[in-house]
Length: 113
Length: 113
Image 1 (tube, chains in turn brown, yellow):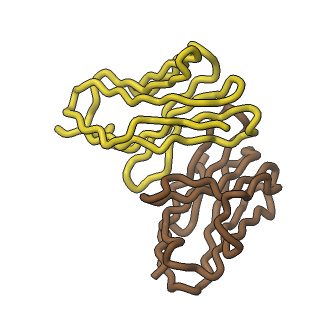
Image 2 (cartoon, helix red, strand yellow):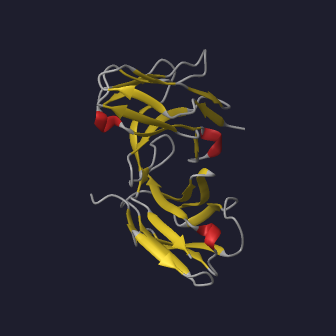
Image 3 (tube, chains in turn blue, brown):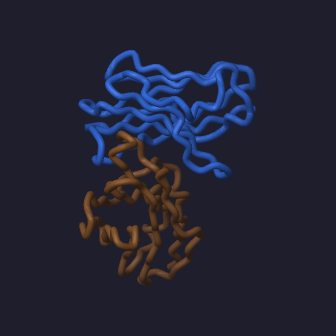
């Protein structure tokens, strides 16, 4: 298994531009999670899905952030418009179920200038 | 609510020294407990886990025992290597919270040759 695949690995964009981050979970994992990691705030859960349905989006910072999971093998996190304070590493993780733990992707390092 | 507290770092050690990272938790019911490791520039990787009281998780020379009476899950390794330099995260998964993991703040470990 190739694990959780995220793209791109690095993204540099200008303030105000739209950014789309992509994630392919492990086949058969019913849960998908989006996290953001910064030095100041550590790891923050943004949103998670179960069977492609968003379950908890209380961590999404504001309306500029949106996430979709159109099918079991693909999810996107979109920021529109992006701001410098969105600069962070964004991780996607998937899980087969409660108590199993997560498998994380390698992350997307986003820099907004 | 659920919470995880782990010792603040950085922890600096010499090679072959003994490592302990303390982790205590607050949760309703009987959570599953995890340790994750994050190497520089990478995502989090599951290091070990324990699902019930007195269980011992172990992997790559690391061990942690689920202590319900002290609500703790301390991570230990008898002889660290330079390659163990990383950030270590303690986490819990409580049934009532679905499949959401609650993470500690992370402990940075630096092993010097």
